[in-house]
Image (cartoon, rainbow over all chains, first blue to last red; front, side):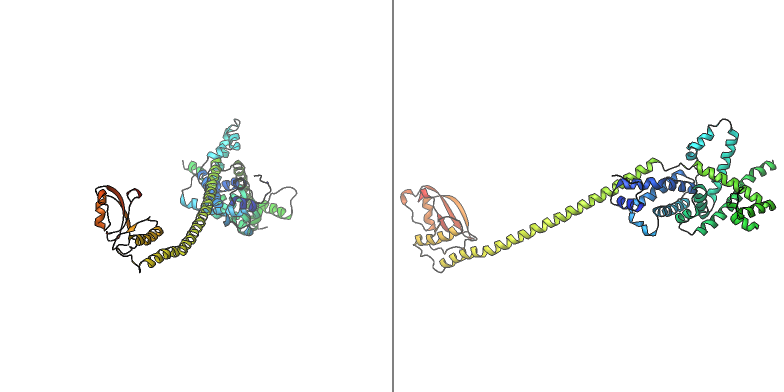
Length: 199
Length: 223
């Protein structure tokens, strides 16, 4: 069965609910990547992110009627499920920092194979790791705002829709999240200096 | 612009030569406030790191095994639904067929019930007509005729009523095939030719529910 790329989500979902596997696959392809990245950045674990994505779409398979097009876009509905699942994962499992995916990404490989600036690359990687770690230590509501607006580069409106809250809330969460991030990073960067000064 | 205002709005500004009034005020504040200048600088560095982190993982997506697992679950779910639907339809069809068969059986039974009493009435009528006029002891022919009617009604053949026997109720009578000497028929009250008394013959006896022979049928050859 042919799938129109512009076909609306609710139409696809209705077809999927009737057993059209292609329609379901199309919905999956539209949303899996941002949802996976969101889950990965929120949990810090590729395994947990995979679980979250699977659970989100299993909800669509088992209970497609849970989504009501009158109440909002399918994306926001899926982000809502993702947030709940992520929270459960965070409560359930201790945080794991998975680096395997980012190390395999083309950008990371480009850095790794650049022979001219190995020291610079190492420094960059260390800083990125500090940032990643600091983001993962943020309280969940600030982390969500930072992940969506800074990492996923969503607009405030898009983030507000995804998190089902007013734009003002996103602004204030971002503001506080940034302040916390800066403080954490400053602390992380100060630690080695202090350690060196002590020796 | 105060430090508080700068913290709220200034951090998000991208300062460039063609700035608006807000950016100009922020730039002015940065020149005069070393704390905010340091904060801004740190934030810009952090923002760059965050962007780089975002770009680094921008192409990430769920492994293909997730899609495979989901498709499998999708097929199982919808396959099960289809099977259930088929099973439900089959169950309803079977139930409808059973009801139909039941109804037809009931109608047939009712039809038979309606036709059977008349048949039984015929037998009873035949029995009723013969019962008040029992045959005399020696008159075997009329008795046999009467019994013959009854037996024909009961598909029992041409039995001759034994002397002194009231026409039996055929419902409980049993036909017994026996081999006996012709002379033994005298014990049943029948007249026998002495010359052939020692012959063995096949006889059908109509035995009543009390075990006593009521009528006899002799094969054609032995008559």
